[in-house]
Length: 302
Picture (tube, helix red, strand yellow):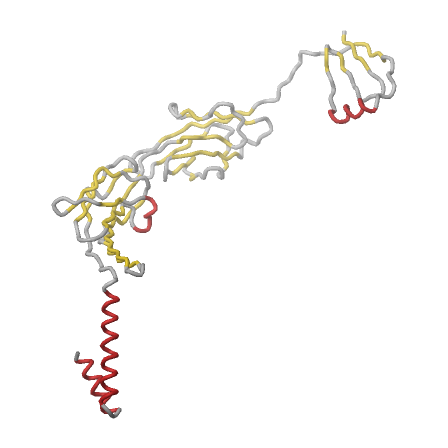
């Protein structure tokens, strides 16, 4: 009201006549009324909730967490166990409170890392003309750290492997793989699947699946260290075998008679086309027949 009067006074000193002063005052008052009416369509910002957690550290997929969320007036209350940055990994909608709080029990984490756990309260309205107004309030964050103590291979094969059976023995912690003759087994990489965030080393050298090459001329020890570093880890003995060239000395000599059988002359066109298409050499009853030749040659072994 004071601003309105001051504005009117200034107008009197600058312009003459009461009519113009009162017209401006009415216009200004109307604008304020319209602005206030628009604000009534906006959602009010909800109060901030708070979250506490039963423990701030745990193991991937094993530890259970209990979150306590305080109640505040809001249209919706949502817990973000992985923080706002990782909302896609999962949230928990809280719809029921008892005694001013709600408890989310036995929550297990599926990802490793340090997360800022928060609660987001939400108010929203829709005006008569369909406009939606949303206001969110984010609580203070509580940090939770998840680590992994697992250190196992679930799959292991070397490059160029021809093993019919899975080379990895998960119980005995050994790998027995085979490659064909001619493969340079002194420069082979291994393709493996290991527990999340575990580190694999050979002789202290960090390995990368499908990339790091090693000399498998002698058995190697692959060490898998868990992400949390608390447990010692797991050792796997890896051996690679090369299939040797087979030598057959059962046949020392070959003798026999080669005779020419009567020529059948040029083959009919239809038969020629069939032979050209199929390119087949039939071997039957120890008789070797060359159908593409102008004559049929029979070799009899003795």
